[in-house]
Length: 147
Image (cartoon, rainbow, N blue to C red; front, side, top):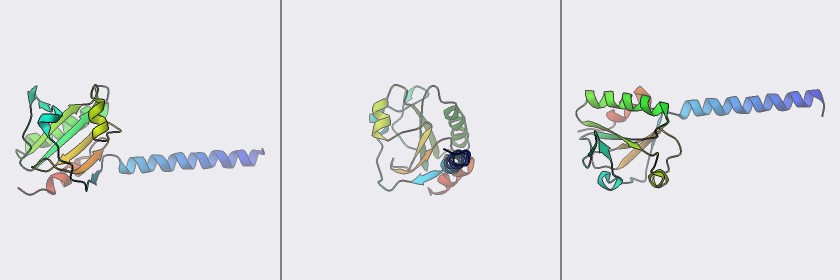
């Protein structure tokens, strides 16, 4: 194989990797609408907040964040969602640890952490945020719901 051919192959591989990275960066942390309207039962899921079982949803919106113990972006996302919860009495943030619950990860098709499901006041999934949530994305999601 000639030097020029090798150089073209390397350049093509670099281009593919850069394009993939740019696509991943553009899509991570953004909300994608979910049309199937999956209903979440927090009691059946075993969701807790401050060590107590949670069965009620936020009056406006609930952010159900799936995390793992070793995920650094999960802590950042939890902090950000917690700030929005503190500022808005009609917003609820629940963090669910998937470390030992692969059954839940499979049920909700969680392929990365953090993944946050955005739920309406009745617990229906309206959208999904893959990766660390962005501030603007959270504001937009809260704004999508009226009380």
